[in-house]
Image 1: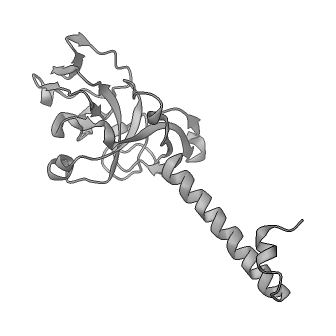
Image 2 (image 1 turned 90 degrees about the vertical axis):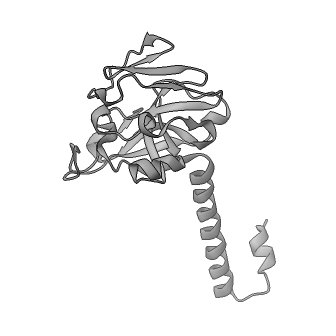
Length: 200
């Protein structure tokens, strides 16, 4: 039984059939890779020290602890089936204010600290959700710059903050991130080899 390509190219010379078969095979393979990147899993590089030491960036950039930047994988479809959770490290599209206030755009990787409907406040560098202090063992450094600030989150908004609090331009500067901007949670580090791990 011949496949559809063989049937369509039956009248062509053998070399032409081989070339067409290879072209179709490569096109299908590329299509599958692009579909996976678009809807399932996508790789990202950590460019700054805002998530140190949880995720490394490359020296000699300021605050970076490693010789090469971590490369991570984000699950692009899981938030279609469940809500994002506090403490998750998430890849998201930056809001316009990030470009103005941090001179950065594209995608960021930060941790969710505030959930929809909550009021998040900063007291001396420690964050509180609806008046209760958050347990944040991942916070590498404290930053009292935002002491006294408060963020009231709407029904589809999240507060995204870097683990390296003293060196992270994040929601404390440019405000909440709408759910539609969230791409997905980081579920693995795949590079460099000595940093390969599940989770973030």
